[in-house]
Amino acid sequence: MAEPLILALDQGTTSTRAILFDRKGQALAEAGRPLQQHYPADGWVEHDAEEIFRACVEVLAEAVRKAARSMDEVAAIGITNQRETVVVWEKATGRPIHRAIVWQDRRTADLCERLREAGREAEVTEITGLLLDPYFSGTKIRWLLDRVEGARARAEAGELMAGTIDAWVIWKLTGGRVHATDATNASRTLLYDIRKGEWSQAMGEMLGVPLGLLPEVRDCAGDFGETEAGLLGRAVPIRGVAGDQQAALMGQGCIRPGEMKATYGTGCFMLINTGEAAPVSRARLLTTIAARVGGKTTYALEGAIFIAGAAVQWLNEGLGVPGGPQAAEQLAARAREDHGVVLVPAFTGLGAPWWDAGARGAIFGLTRDSSLPEIAQATLDASALQTRDLIEAMRADAPEAFHGGVELRIDGGMSRSLFFSQRLADLTGISVCRATYQETTALGAALFAGVGAGIYASLEEAAAARPRTEGFAPAMDKHRREAAYARWLDALTRVRS
Image (tube, rainbow, N blue to C red; front, side, top):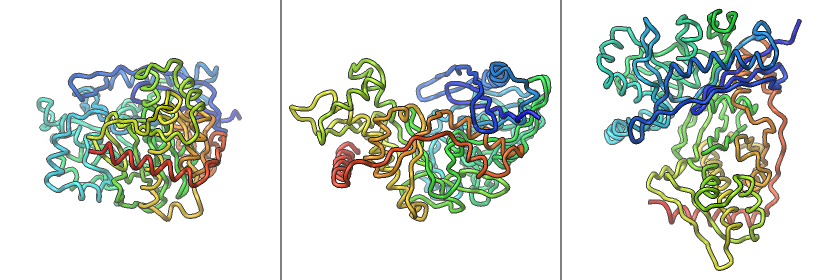
């Protein structure tokens, strides 16, 4: 019998892609479609949910076709998605009542501020592990019910459904037979009690969202129904679902406490598995569900860096350094040793653990000998130093996860740079493992689906299919490392509002 194949659907913020994997985690083919962004007002970001669904069907079929394989060989589909983007649609027709509101959207900032001023954030964090921020889905659903004519009355009458992108895609793929999400996506809505493992009546009342709108919450590896036969040529089981960062955590094999990963794109998302403990962060990190498999929930602490790869883009475009990221890396490698230049890329404020929206970027330590190589190196170092900020915050919040030493598993665009990977190890003092295969998010979705379909007997067996890695050990002496971090902390003090 032919080896079973797993089809991963990766529905992201700017594109929709599908990748066909074999049991060993090897990618056989992929297909993608760009996703149009809509900006109807300042700070508003929307997607066309119907466009997303059409693209999903197209790329799933195309990836199998490109591999010259048959859909009959596909044992399961795994889905991963942009986490906090939300859709509200009609139960009877499947038509969205409005465009999807994207995770980047800030239209509900006033509501979040009112709740914060009313002293509700501590309660929110205790229940959901999150902060009061328009980033999350719950206030977006509230906005749609309040602003779309007749929506609230229809919701209360049971005529509407709501969910994050995974729930929308599952409902459409199954022909309206399954309204479900997984625990990782549920944990990003501001409506889910991450400790009790159920939708929170208290949060529903606080945000004005009827819980009857929401999908059933299932394990990340489990039964999410089957696709309608007419969509892909046969009914294909959907057996795995996870939000994008949690899928990447799985794709990097971080299934045990203390295992952590960082994804370096425009910004950086970093998560550390904390096992069955769900610590309340004192550093305003997010406590989130890492996975739920076989009814067992594991948790993670998550921190976000606003500007990572975007700082290199600024170096290329803002300072006119030609040649893209590779040229920036070559320039940085020519910098003088211990030059003392520090760049704080607070172009849009500072993320975790500082949370200072008023901070702005600056360069410190310039001397007559400073030039572009020093600035280029300081630009790359900023991502490494911000990573150390998150590591120190995580160490303070969950010291037990750091027992026995840790390594940082990395992926994303910046991780392709050998120079950056080594600087990351040097400036954090932690061994770094770079994934040689970059599509760890899609792979994670495939691995969850493989467990759900019985292709893998356990998470441990699935995690063994993680990509080959390249290791980087810290080579900088401790005195230089701590001096560099002290300069960084001093620069942060100067830019913070």
